[in-house]
Length: 252
Image 1 (cartoon, rainbow, N blue to C red):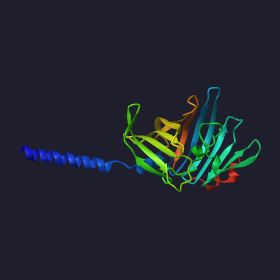
Image 2 (cartoon, rainbow, N blue to C red; image 1 turned 90 degrees about the horizontal axis):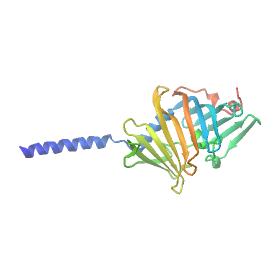
Image 3 (tube, rainbow, N blue to C red; image 1 turned 180 degrees about the vertical axis):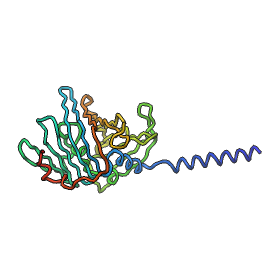
Image 4 (tube, one colour; image 1 turned 180 degrees about the horizontal axis):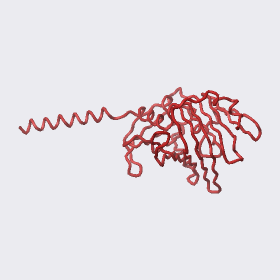
């Protein structure tokens, strides 16, 4: 009788373990989920970006439209000195518009890692030139913890043919609800360059998402850029004329 019961217990344990293993997500599934959650197929909204350094602090209000992964448009609303500045990306091409001199400047691929508006966000961070899901190979590593919260750890390395700016990105994703908590950006030599922390999860645009994104450069720990989402709408059709050079030069 004991042998029979032991066999049953062993069989149940194996069944449970097998089910748990089958239910475990892949790295690609987790990154795809994060992309859908944060960006959707399309999104539009308003945000406030605060740039902090040891010597000064500045705030920028902006409006954005994104049609993933092909097109992005960003317009600065305030302060008055920067109001009207715009950024447009169509596939691999990007332009900035400077209303003070009424000039459109095309941004070469070599400039995608340059700071956007003096922040710790790069051109690539703001307009998302690369596709995180398609351009990287995603490997699920050992589970980790952030401030006592259990997270998945996914290491994403670029595919050989991918035109991307990072040598590696590591995602930390909360296990309980698969909300991203952190992304770590590494250069081609494997050196950690900066960390994006996702904070203040609340409902916005009909879904629970982090609404405060903080970018911290590793070499400048006293600097940070905080991006706070104010309004957000997901997956609604966007007018095609938003993503045009003509619209880029219209500041009203």
